[in-house]
Length: 413
Image (cartoon, rainbow, N blue to C red; front, side, top):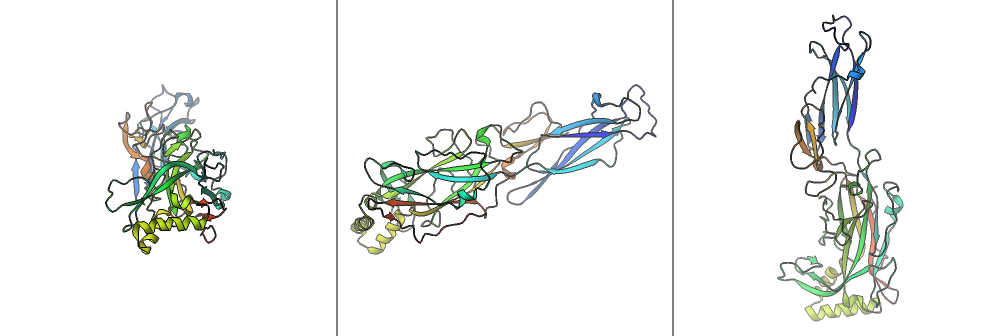
């Protein structure tokens, strides 16, 4: 909400005809606005002048002194030019109203993306800096390990499915961790599914604090990539997993793939599959030899063995997650802060007003979808990037794939 106060008076040379009142003028206000949509289009809109109004407590106490009035309205992510003018007792408006231009929004920021197993909680807070360079430059590691009972510690990924499968198609290169609907031409190997969490830490500008924790960041763009999956075949995290398409959906239930905790942090629960034969060996060489032999018995063709091996270990090795924080959502999610901006024919906001997605308010002129004009933490080609490593840790102390020689991807800033 923004509030303007205008001060004005009539020309002292004008003869005052209505001697029963002290005030000489009343006030009117309006705005012209311009929204810039994410795809680059510009959308102008405006209101009419408000009804003439005065504030009795600010009437002049002596003749020819100054009167004053205020006018307020709700702002959105738009560029505004506000105009305010005086109107005399003959309802003649001044020809040169005063104007003030401003922009009604600040972009949010990404602080950090953390990677942990399911047992580890984050101690990162909203008070940390934006674009945490220590977080961005640190390459964390999580290991899949086979033992009974399962090994514990922050370096170990969590086993979430002992009886999993990795499904794949040799001819197309598609890979799934759940059974696809169309299984023609689809092969599979027995695998252990491991899990980890991605914690998306972000915050809005200090001048725009959220009313509720879940409104801290309204939506995210994210993409989980693996060095061996350059085409982003595997979709992770329960959202869109494509930096060009925002993810709006979330839950407050920690059992769901995407949920928001009590502090407003978005948490994505990611799973990755490891072929059981490759995993359940005492050393790297034994694991690779045993798994390749299993595949050779299936295909009896070394080229197919290579393709199947690569597809079923696609998530292992260097990985990185790119994120962009957004301050708007769509109208599908039930949020405490809704998804529409409503503005009114004569500017003034009625008592009954808000950002509801359906219906109108009294005196409303139009409504705009806030998501079309969302402010984002960065451009698509400059996301916050978190690098990490997913590998197998054998009892021998060896890891697969060997971390040496892995390319480290650098954050956009």
